[in-house]
Image 1 (spheres, rainbow, N blue to C red):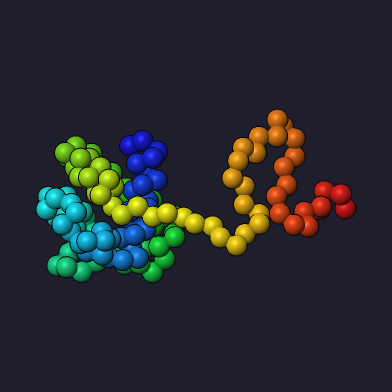
Image 2: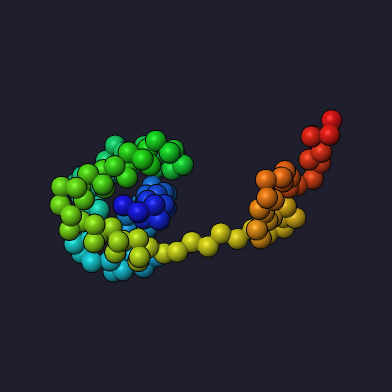
Length: 131
């Protein structure tokens, strides 16, 4: 999978862990096809209860190892049947997009910080180099 898909997949898995399957999409499962919904549900739920990996992610959604394990479950499923890759793409495309906003911060870099090999320091009281 391309890296952007991996990043998007990680975002989906984090959302899945935090909100659960039905709430991972703002308007419910109507956004994705029944096949895609049933496939992802079969990977992370059994008898409508979260499987172990999802429970572990729910306890700690930022755990990189657990996210990687959950992504591996999806990747293994795609290796078993390549048609599932279309489901992943559909889920990622229809997943609500989150927008990160930074406010009330004076130490935000919004442009190019290429110093041509020189030092770059951002923030207040960063004169540690001169001590």
